[in-house]
Amino acid sequence: MTKTISEFHDLFVGGEWVSARSEHRFEVISPATEELIATVALPSIEDAEAAVSAAREAFERGEWSGASMEHRADVLGRFCDLFDQRRADWTAAWVAESGPTRAHSDFLNDLVIGIWRDIVETAKRSPVVERRTYPDGTVDIVAEPYGVAVTITTWNGPALYLVSKVVPALLAGCSVIVKTAVESQLTARIIGELANEAGIPAGVLSVLAAPTDVSAHLVAHPDVDKVSLTGSVAAGKSVMAACANNLTPVTLELGGKSPAIIADDIALDKVLPTLLPAFFMNAGQICVALTRLIIPKHRHDEIVEAVVAGLSQVRVGSPEDPASVIGPIGTRAQYEKVLNFITSGKEDGASLVCGGGRPAGLDHGFFIEPTVFSNVTPTMRIAREEIFGPVLSIMTYEDIDEAVEIANSTPFGLAGTVYAADENLARNIADRIRSGTVAVNTIGPSLYAPFGGYKESGFGRENGREGIREFQQLKSIKIA
Image (cartoon, rainbow, N blue to C red; front, side, top):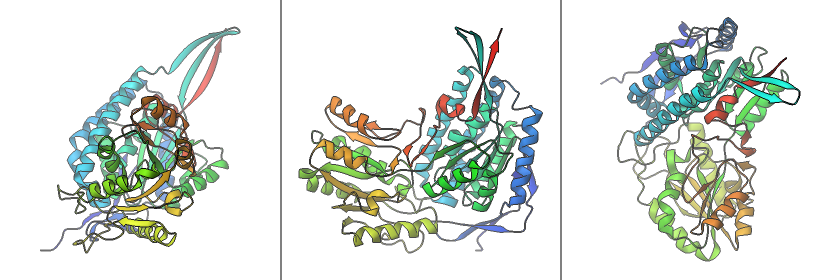
């Protein structure tokens, strides 16, 4: 039987479906089978220009930017309800284009819907105008939308980026251009369809699943007032440099190399049920994945054996198979990058204790076994750089001060976890970790709370009231 290959030649620009302005096409390849599943129109710089023009006109028109917060929240609540109704379509699209397991997608959809509804209610409770009295008079502090916002996202969690970037920007009153990863073609289409149905006014939202040249054009555009990026450190530096010319404010979430410190006083049965999923969830392709395990030196063998035993029960396979816990790496380029890191770990002298290659029986697709290295030192590449794959580095410490020093020894500072039976000890360690979020005896972060990084993990905060504020600026109006 001939396989059906979907074809889409239109784009969601300025709130309507229009023909792409170039003949260039992008082939969507399944990371699980390496088969062609769709051919789609590739957004061009001309399409980006049209999106910016529509966004600027819509913002100045004021139908959305001048609407009440209650009205915008009602529309975004309807958007959420529509997403909930289409969750099966969303899962099918994301699994096809990026390879997460259906179980992971279902878990994320539930999380996203909860966060989405919470931020809509938070917006309704957040005053747009706050009156303050000072010694020199009365001042109204007014939260106003920046204007045209560009949100740049990656392929590893498009639904999460909806609630961490797009929804807050829209609630703030911005016109928004969603620049998704070029690999996120199918989920990008669903965003456009839902936005239309939700009743977001013409011009307010465009969705471009475009390559990096389009991103570069957008962030340097003089009519763009705010940029929010999730991506690599290199991408963040490039975007920040491009924005500098126009002094465009930027929010950056640039990944992490998150540590998990196990104190000497806690039993492993209190650790492994959360530690292991936090390492291999979505094949390690989450920015807060716990990829550095820092353990007491004298417990090395006990902990390594327990980790390996736990991972031996984890099934790697087709994301369509309900029994699969780990699916493929999302793209060929990322797959090759992860394999390169595994080679680097071996060459640098780390001990490969499990995994390291393609699982038996999976001859096609970008699959990698969960991989564990021990005898890792903090200066090795696998201990310092974000791998974005199922590779765990185990390091040992003599005392807690050394554990904290190792935890803080990378350029990143996004997340981390502390496992300790003594609550005071756990909190003391958590307070000393230089990262935007830390979990104690569980995994995190809470994505209802402000989320963001320290150091090269970026700056600015997403989610909650603070996430909306990233897309607003404050005006003070002094009243006689």
